[in-house]
Amino acid sequence: MKKKILYIEDNEQNLYLVTFILEKYGYEVASATDGQEGIDLAAVVKPDLILLDIQLPRMDGYEVAGHLRENPHLADIPIVAVTSYAMAGDRDKALAAGCTGYIEKPINPDTFMQQVEQHFQ
Image (cartoon, rainbow, N blue to C red):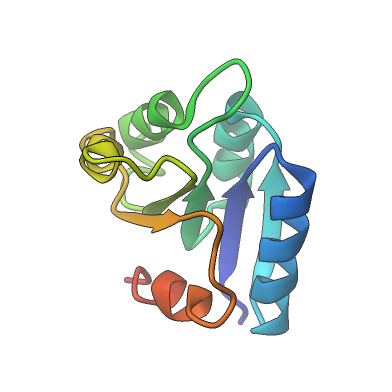
């Protein structure tokens, strides 16, 4: 059975690229373009992993991670921040918000899958 990944991302180009790579490696990908849609979809899809952009409209990724962690049915799903926030402290802020990992954008297609796959339980 294919592993399911939920990608919460509002940028069409990033969404396309990451989805393309994940599907090429055999993953089933669901996507949401804002935080609330992502939270709602996570409850339905029950993904094996959530990739989460931090710069989202209406509700940022930190808040999304917090809501996901508060839901007992979703709290154990690994959440990896995939973000262009790459300043000192940004990784720590993402981890403090509930993310279990952090990948900087722009992603490197040569190493992206290795970075993603290390987060499966």
